Image 1 (cartoon, rainbow, N blue to C red):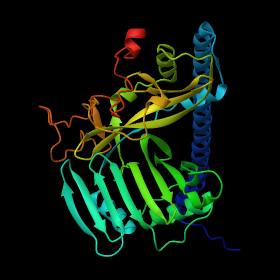
Image 2 (cartoon, rainbow, N blue to C red):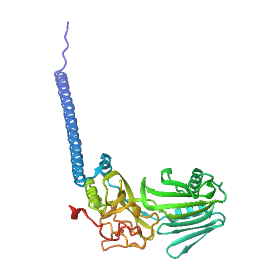
Image 3 (cartoon, rainbow, N blue to C red):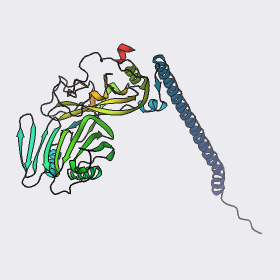
Image 4 (cartoon, rainbow, N blue to C red):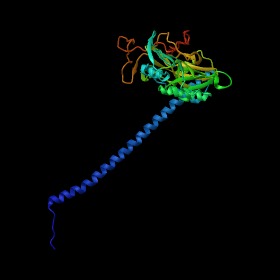
Length: 371
């Protein structure tokens, strides 16, 4: 039988193909092994980081416990977890369109508007009037004659929620409290207290008091801030630590024997012309009342000293090295103060609530002085 032989070139080609296949297989296996080793190393590094974080957290809690033990103060373990992250700083500008929408939602008939001295706008309708100052102070006296008169506290609260919803203001139930004006039936009227929040955190010094009298005569007074909050980066908060906050509380004149809980709150500082800056604070609940710690300055005041109705008779507080998320330094508005570098100067007094809650100067403490 005649045998056929492949050409020499074809035989070499087939030989190269047969030798290349095992080589690429070994390369692929080596790559997979390297990837597996890298994944194991990454998991090991992650575990080390988690372990170190747990160690630092434990050491911090131990250090805090030692400080508290020296003072004979008890503290719940949940307090440490809350203190780990500081509240953000926001800036807001009064929204005149939202204020007008609120006034027109309350008033009926032909509504007229005009400006009064002190940057205050006044709207008048057939059923009353609404005035709103640039500082956030609101004063409304209107008759809700088209609404059914409430007979219970729950009905009164729902009525006010409907009225506020027409103006685009949605207040959660937890921030509203309704009490009868007098004893007996609900015909004597109701008082409804409304607190304002920002990103789920209460704004101390901001809120409204609604008095709903028989005949649906509504009087609404207090301080309410409008406008979209814009987050600001404050370099003073980049070095924040939980032990620093606790140290500042212990270095104050507050007297207590147990820290029951802690929660973030804000206090507004008014710049001028409707510009507001939120001052991040911690509110410590103790057996001797609540105390508010200003995270930026370390000042501590009793929570009861911060009035619900705020006036703006004091100079604002300067937040050094404050810049927005986009990298700009402040938001410059008409009438805002600007320094030589073009940076917008923010308020100078972190307790600019108009309540003189911290005017004796004895509460001015800093981490550097104490440390």
